[in-house]
Image (cartoon, rainbow, N blue to C red; front, side, top):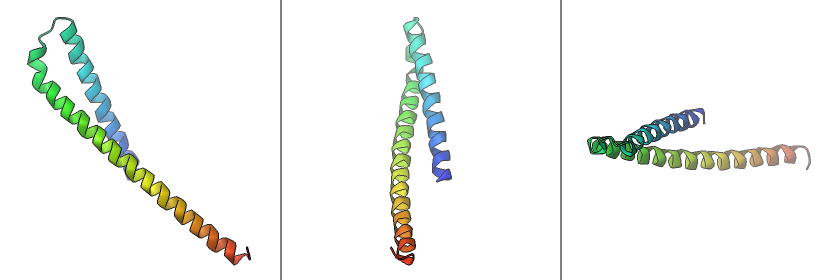
Amino acid sequence: MTQDESALDQAARRLDRSLSLLEQELAGRRAGGEGELFDPARNSLAAELEQSRQRERELRAAGAEASRALGQAIAEIEAVLGGGRGG
């Protein structure tokens, strides 16, 4: 699970970076900057943002599945231990 958390942290950092760059570009555009020059960069950032969001969704789903499996394993172990004690 540590590996998933690490990947989730990495995805969150990429998402934060993408949002920051996008906000900077939008602020420049509002200030009269030449936003057209940044269209390819914005498109690239938007694609990276979507990939990061998709990866986050995948990691959350994997984490939820791992949590369910762990809960089931705990319940089974408790049932075995409880059965061994006589109830």
